[in-house]
Image 1: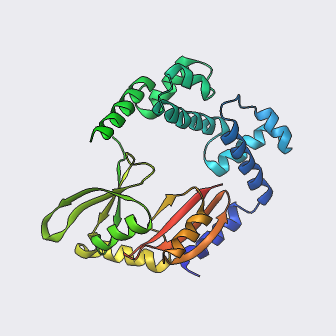
Image 2: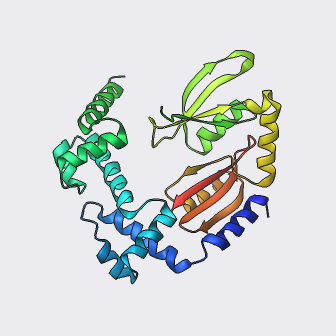
Length: 134
Length: 131
């Protein structure tokens, strides 16, 4: 066994020894991936998984480095990019991916992507036009 | 300030280009001749062609500490870097069929599935899937 594998085993034993916890957070992430366009209901999730809401939050962050809400926002922004590239309007995209206000969507998008949804879409659509011309 | 490039030390640029494009599925982006037969050679992911570029740099051939570091990582089985995949198991099957040698078969640690292979240019590379 290489040094790397020995180290992984050692670390695994220390921080990843609770398989039930791991399965719980994998389930939560999967739920978010499939329901990002709905309201995130941590109460519902924690009831479903038989853990307290706060415990769930802590566990998720421990394994994924982000809170469920942060992960949800990233997922929605990622999906919104896909829709904008497909030509969906900014307003329609906003609501399609689960945001509730155009203002907060645009601000979040600009913060994370570095440009507004409109600028992003314009850029992407003109790029694909250029690609098809060459 | 943006992160747009990561560098991978390789012993042979042409061999690395072939391996990374033909086996791993990356696409060549920039190829600029420099001095001494060296090239500024970058590749990008097929699924993210305007994403970060991977620079295949021949550092170990020209700078002893770079060679020493690369060899030490290799010896310890430590991957030089990692790439995200949708499914480690199917990438493992696909790459094994293509003759790629894995030092670590698909394994799970916490919420991550991973495997480690040899890029034939001096590095172990890790594939990672988030569960």
